[in-house]
Image (cartoon, rainbow, N blue to C red; front, side):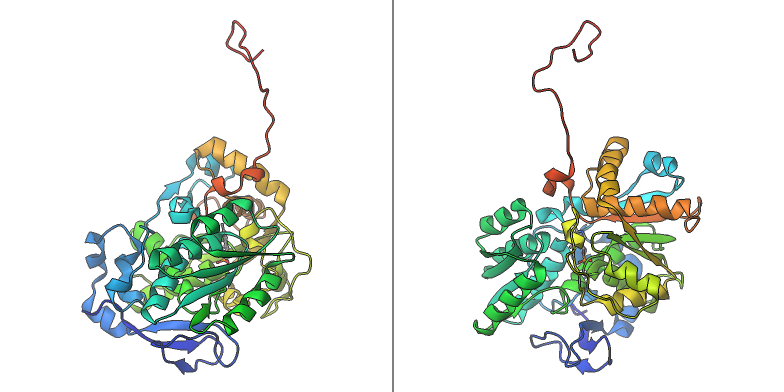
Length: 406
Ligand SMILES: *Cc1c(COP(=O)(O)O)cnc(C)c1O
């Protein structure tokens, strides 16, 4: 059996077919391209249960990933993150069947590692000479590290407001780091310009190349396999560019076509910050595309994406699954980081905590019921966001006779 059953790429708007074995960007319609596989062959040759004995890595689904030759797989040991129950926290919010898929333990500290692992591996296979990308932080850190792993150079453009720690990760990875006095779209313009002057380089900003999505799709395969080949009732996802949400939805559709799971779909919820909520706005107004947000701002920097290129795909996934979209405040997010840390010992990133705030809200409104099994994606480690946990403690303390701080 072949390592990958990738067959072609397809325009997400027109359905036009593109060659998958040359470097591709957007379709001529300016839309993201989706990777398609020969699912009939996979269905015939790969029984679902054959996966069980494979290594605990996202590459266990390699037939459904785009890398044709295993020699090109660029790995830092990513994937197969735990699905943890949050019984105490869930019960307190009236959602006793609350689960988190904790992506905080991935290399580079966020689920961007999944996209970077597949994107870099496939680009290397197709002979790309270097990578350039704009980023709010986590994606740049991940691509810089995976590029280094592949022995390829990278140029990372970051707004000056992006977290210091992500800059340092890029420097540690030997990337060329450029800070832009503006927002991610300004970093994007600079990167685009650079790529036109560097032969063989690829622009790898969100959904402008087709394979990052394939990496993030593995979250969907994993969570379904980890639940015993079934979907939860609801999935809450912190949506920025939306790659994870689109990817999980794509994975579920593929597994259905493969006959690996039944027809049930989880209701998919996009969670955003009130400081940047173009998807929530589009869902509420019944639009097919977002209206770009101006002057966006949120502590959850991974979801500060004012004009996502994957808006139509996100909105389609939300509607098709009878999901919804919720915006939550930074204040509530910060409080939730502490609340879930103290209740369950999981140090979530603000993006992940935003999903818990949304779960509370949806439970209060009755959209979630007490019997729903609700899975939240914690997309990164809280360690990357030290400023999201304000504290004040005495510097020098003594204990009184009763063991209390005096
Ligand atoms: C990038 C990022 C997101 C949003 O991911 P998209 O695929 O762009 O929607 C959420 N959380 C964290 C921690 C991120 O780094």
